[in-house]
Image (cartoon, rainbow, N blue to C red):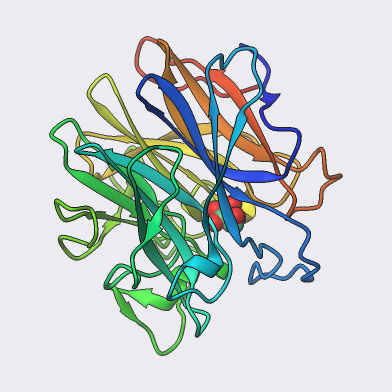
Amino acid sequence: MKKARYLFPSDYMADPAAHVFNGKLYIYPSHDWESGIPENDNGDHFNMKDYHCLSINDIENDLASDEGVILSVEDIPWAGRQLWDNDVVEKNGKYYLIYCMKDKTDIFHLGVAIADRPEGPFRPEANPIRGSYSIDPCVFKDDDNSVYVYFGGIWGGQLQRYKDNKALENAFLPEGKQVALPSRVVKMTDDVLQFAEEPKPVLVIDDNGEPLKADDPHRFFEASWMHKYKGKYYFTYSTGDTHFLCYAVGDNPYGPFTYKGVILDPVVGWTTHHSIAEYKGHWYLFHHDCVPSNDKTWLRSLKVVEIEYDKNGNIKKVM
Ligand code: FUB
């Protein structure tokens, strides 16, 4: 197995969402910077204010090129602060960037911005997606052209403040043998601007069909990703405070997904976040760590490593 290598040493970027558009590989990361906000469990130190698009032709040898700023906080009418993870999907020749950000009252929502090219610039919609909440959108287009968004993140990502898509009076974070908080999945409308339905919980189950429990170090925390391999749906995610990247496999976009294992052990830095994409016949894991910033957890650097599946479709753990 090959070793992970850094992709963009000239700036701090994180949460890479990788996609191939028109034969070229694009990466949509969060853009970390030193804003001076002290570290806390709320994630206030992740105070990002714009997104860049990166692109790359030769994934084995080249560094990524910066296509420039594609969206800034100051351009978004409903903006409060903190442009966290984002992702992009192409549909009918248009590119839809789905992102998360806090509104003026410090509540996270998802927003949409549209472009004619993968490199942007993206024009933001005036309001967040109706009924959206929490963070870390992953946009997945299935073979029938349906677009799904997976989202959610615990702690600073505010997922514990919601149940059945309604805001709770008091946040509820399961503990011990209670069922862990799930990520959410929702089908988008044909124009990719709104939820077409109520978001549903993404169930990760063990081999006995039981949902993973809150005290399981491999339960969901944030950073959902979906990819399809040989007709199966691979739901991958970060376990947050236990710092793994894990995967679970299902037969349709809604799941349930059966837990399969760890893809990546904890990296240097508190967060771990990723995407998986096929490029020129090989599969790659894009992620980040904090080695170049000497473990400043809010200053992360992008990495890529090729991944392999065994003959049964299991992802071999990255070493
Ligand atoms: O980049 C800010 C947050 O850190 C992301 O939304 C989380 O997934 C974690 O990577």
